[in-house]
Length: 292
Length: 223
Ligand SMILES: Nc1ncnc2c1ncn2[C@@H]1O[C@H](COP(=O)(O)OP(=O)(O)OP(=O)(O)O)[C@@H](O)[C@H]1O
Ligand SMILES: [Mg+2]
Image 1 (cartoon, rainbow over the protein chains, first blue to last red):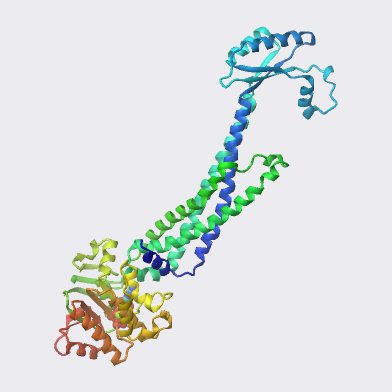
Image 2: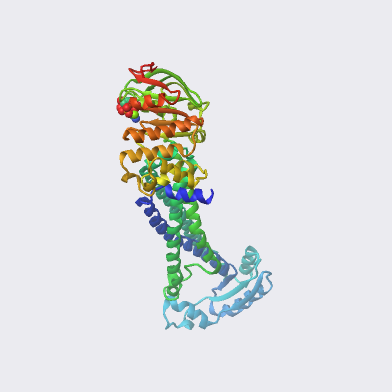
């Protein structure tokens, strides 16, 4: 469309009409929600990745044995681990470290020496990792009190929870898109309906459907872009100050956007505009078909 | 330009007219008369395709109305100037913008000089920036005629274009339409005004069609 044609297409639809303001308002609200859903999706993905990476390469061997057996079995286990390919490092936790781990559960004044506490050996595995089944067999043959634990039991539900959280966030994003489409379709219908006379006159003067539709579509999608940009800006600003909370409020730690993922927010306004464009264009053509 | 073959129209309460066959040739000049409610406006609406006949065939510029796509209809209307009985403006645009709309809304250039001249001719030079709702009935009709002719149409359809005008202004507008006709535009004017018809017949070859009692007939020499 030429500049003149664009100017006239902006003119032919009267400026009044609250439906167009409702588009701005709802686009702002939806963009605001979309920012948080997006942050949730990104954080959940990061969390899942973080948890699987942190836990994937660590494992422990727990030795439960009578006190007189303990030293011997520990030595045997360490020897087995030393000769197992895929294990980078094995380290016996000292009693202070173990006390620290248990303190969280049992309190500080723990007479550790008097309790039959199992000994823990912390393993650092290489990327490839050991042959876990073979390692278990060798350990049970050499030291019957030793149990290998690769944390799978802990890791899987955590990673699953994070993945589910991410899926929920993506569904939320989809629903926000659906609601946005519905609102814009309704607003476009309302705007077209209240301008029935304008449309009829333009048709009789020989204007093509495309010209008439664009007059409405441009108005609506520009409003959607404006609203969406505002909503994204406000939500983004709030998100920006949120990580300060994270250091003090544990559940919020890690929620938010880091580095390049902030760029994802830039997608929201143009995407809203594209959505508005498509929805209002389809509506306009639908309405126009009823005008001769 | 326009061919009706056995056209009937019915809004749902029985046929308004039946088996109407007419041909409006290029460069022709016709009047359409008849009592109020006989179907003059309806016949004009069939000509520019706002209505589709309930029976029979209407061809507009060589194309069957029923076969035309929406874009073809739009393209055809760009060659037709229409004065509606109720004028129909975009009330939020100025008179000048409304008059220029047939060109600007169809992507054609609007020569400002032509617009000014035309508004001057119909006596609206000083009302160019007014909004349509502030115009008098006669001013509206003059603006409507200006809008109908700005695109140099090959067919002009005017529904009671002088209903609210004094005789001098009626003559002035008729002269404008006759001038267009002289340059090749086919003209069809629906009117009750016998003086207007007589005045035209003294200047151009005009045929008079009369619609009444569900029939369209060619009026005789009594006019
Ligand atoms: N959209 C419509 N729906 C139903 N009936 C209609 C419609 N438009 C017109 N009519 C009826 O059709 C008849 C003819 O109307 P039309 O406007 O064609 O008459 P007309 O000859 O132009 O009259 P006038 O001289 O008063 O302008 C009238 O009885 C009118 O009430
Ligand atoms: Mg009429």
